[in-house]
Every structure is written in structure tokens, then in C-alpha cells.
Amino acid sequence: MDRVLFVTSEYYPLIKTGGLADVSAGLTNALREKGVDVKVLIPGYPQVLDKLHNQRLIAKITVDVGILKTVELIEGNVSETGQLIWAINCPEYFNRPGGPYLSEAKTDWPDNVQRFALLCRVAEDLSLGKTLTHWTPTIVHCNDWHAGLTPAFLSTHKKRPAVVTTIHNLAYQGVFEYEAFEKLKLPSEWWSFDKLEFYGNFSFLKASIVYSDFITTVSPTYAKEILTPEYGYGMDGVLSYHQKRLKGILNGVDYNLWNPTSDPYIYQSYSHKSIDLKDKNKSEFQSNMGLNKAVSTPLVGVVTRLVDQKGMDLLPNIILKTLEDKYGVQWAILGSGEGFIESALTDIAKKYPDRVSVRIGYDESMAHNIEAASDFFLMPSRYEPCGLNQVYSLKYGTLPIVRNTGGLADTVIDASVGNIKNGTATGIQFEHCEVNAIVGALKRALFIYKDKELLLQLRREAMKQWFSWDQSAQDYLSIYKIACDNNR
Ligand code: ADP
Image (cartoon, rainbow, N blue to C red; front, side):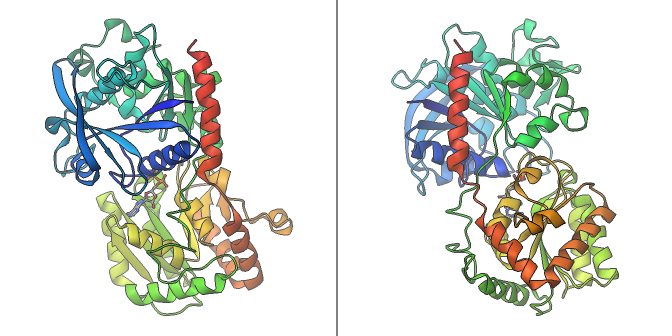
């Protein structure tokens, strides 16, 4: 049976800035259920060390990040699931206010290169059984750029475990200047176009792509898209070169956390057999948020990072268009991100308090309530590696309105005439990330909303969809096998 060292910078509920945290937890839980021995290696951010249960110091590890650093390896577990975690306690690097990657002023931590090189060096040490001799992995599963130097470090050893890298978002590449390359004292032969060098800098993610035995990304469509200049963010060439070792595996979702039949955050639970009850969540939400209490008015939800990737720069104009053109819609928005988007949305909410509710910030409970209360859920992403909220929306009978890209394309079936006829439609897709196309998709949604029978048909079909981690974990097990073969 596989022994997996899962190297990640985020893990729900310990530390989360986005989907990586959900995926790390969902996948490792599903692998454990299949009998896989998984240990999660994560930086010891204060949030992690605060939440980790049954902590004990199991080793002191000295690694070279240009200078020698000795860190503590703290073993503990996630109380909700029992997942075993190894947290790297290095207060100088990880114990700071602000986020894992950005300071409170929202700028990159200036020593990110050493902070994440440290994660990779500790991963290398544990993979080879240097300090902890009683447990070595058969697979090292690296996630995103933060873990990217691990495969490169391991490539210098004759006998090593197989390495799989998962790209959760290709836009984040861990790119640093030559000075940083020198600072880490990386081998000079790695400064080459077919190794780490990347347009005059070097990239942690590229290191992962070049040196892993297998590369996955989080949906089949995104796996194809990233081979093109439009979505490749400069990595399309190197990915195309290594594409025989690349596959898209759709993320699952955790239906223990996201399920309207048992969601502790929502006002009224419901299932596909009692969809009528869903509206009680809407009325409650409307009251709580000061929206006009009209259950017959369709409510459109948005929960997201407020950034260009998600098409959120267009959201203020989209909302204004629906208000000015007097479409009978209300909006429920939760997110944080770019200041100009935050303030534009806040201004609109002030002007139209009975039609638009905006909450700036991160709020788990509100995210669940928006899913339960809304009739539609808008995701106009410019690109979307997988996306989770559209899958949550399906389970809540909240029809997703999505751009036809990445994981959105793989999970939502458009309400075309043909798909409505054969009963497979679960939402609405549109092609272009521009205001008119999105407003056009909203108009289609309103048309469906008016036809109660059709609405019910789509909601039922949406709620029947099942994107659990079980299948995805099975696919990862097959990839682990191929990676082991590639490592021979
Ligand atoms: P990404 O990882 O690109 O941000 P995903 O759709 O893969 O996007 O995952 C986003 C996750 O973060 C979802 O679980 C979503 O509910 C959650 N999320 C995003 N913004 C917020 C917020 N402001 N409050 C609560 N949850 C949020």
C-alpha cells in the first residue's frame, strides 16, 4: 500500500486562502479511506499551530536554504478527521501576522524564496528518511509552486520515492530573480531553459514540471487549456513538452461539509425531495441582509476572491446593468480582494440596499448561507482550473451560471434545448467573459426562473450530480502507480 507524503501550503481547516486548502483535505481524507498511509507536510503558520491537536515534537531537522536552518517538526492531527499533520515550526519564517504569502499590506513576503525552499528541503529530508528513519514515503505528492523545488532536490538522489505534482492554478508560478537562485545556492546547471530558468528568472513551478514523474491538474479541460498560449502563462511550451506525463483529474467536493440536508450553517435543511423548503433560506437571508422580502424575486449569489481571474472586475457593471434595466433580480455577494472592486461593490450596496447585499471579508457561514439562499450562482471566470463553488451550487439546487472554461466546463451542463429535452441540463454556460455575454446568460437564467416546471427539472438534476472525492482519489491512485513506473 502507498505511503504518501503530501506537501502543501494550505489545509482546511488549519489554513485556507482558497481551493488548495479544500482539495488538500478532501483528497487526503479520501485516500485515507482507501487505506493509504498519508502524512501531510505543511509550514507551521500560527493558524496551523493554533489548531493542531495532540501536538508533539518528533524531530529537529537541519536543512540548507543557502544557509543552514534548524527547524522543529511538530506532529499533530486535525481533530475533525484525525489526519496526521507534520508542521514545520520555524517562527522566523512562518510565525507572522498577515497571510501565508502576503504581508498585512498585501505585498509578497520578501523572503518567500527561502520560506518555501525550506518547505521543499524538509520534504526532501523526510522523503529520503534522513532524519526520521522509521517512515519514508513511496510517493511524494507536491502541490503548487510552494512545494516546487522538492522534485528538483529529489532528482539529485539515485534512490528516491516517486514524485507527483498537482497544479491547482498555473498563474501562480513562484518566480524569483537570479539573485534568489544564488542565495539558495542551487546547482548552476539548473539555470537552463529546460530546467528551472524561466524568461530570465527561475520558477519553482517549472522545477516541479520538469522533475516530477507525473503532473496532474485539477480538471480535464484545464489540462488541455494550459497547453495553449492563452491559458499557459508562459508555461505552455514546457507543459507541451512534458504532456505525456500530464493529466487532468477533476477535484471532488466534501459532501459532509457541503450538503443542504445536513449543513449546520443554514437556516432550513432540504433535499432534492423537498426543494420547496429551499425558499425558507432565501426569506431568512433577505430579512437578515435587509433585502426586499420578495421570495418571487430571483437571488443571484457570488462567493469568491474579488480578482480579475474570477471576472470580478466586471461584476459592478453587471449588477448596475441588471438594476438599471430593471431586471427583477437581487444579489448576494461575499468576497475580498482588489480594493477597487471591493469599494465599487460596497458603493452599489449602499445605493441599492434592498436589492444588493455585499459582505467584504471571509466568512464560512455566510458562504454556506448564500449557497442555500440563492437561486443562481454566478462564476464568470476568465480561467478556472476546477472551481468548487459551482459544484457546491449544484448540490444546493442553486443553478450555476458559468463561463465555458476549465472545471466549469467539466461540471455544469448547459441548459441548451437539447440538454433540456434529454433531461441532463444543470445550469447555464456562456462563452465570453464580457459584460454583455454575462448579462445575456443572466437573462437566460431569468427565463428559466419564470418557468417553474423547468426550474424544478434543472434543480433536481443539479442536486443529483455527484462529484465526490472517492472517484478522484481512485484516479490519483492510478497516477501514483504510473509515477512509480516512471521512476524505475
Ligand atoms: P480559488 O481557489 O481559485 O479561490 P475555488 O472555487 O477553487 O477558487 O475555491 C474557493 C473556495 O474558497 C471555496 O470553498 C469558496 O467557498 C471559498 N471562498 C472564497 N472566498 C470566500 C469568502 N470570502 N468567504 C468564504 N469562503 C470563500
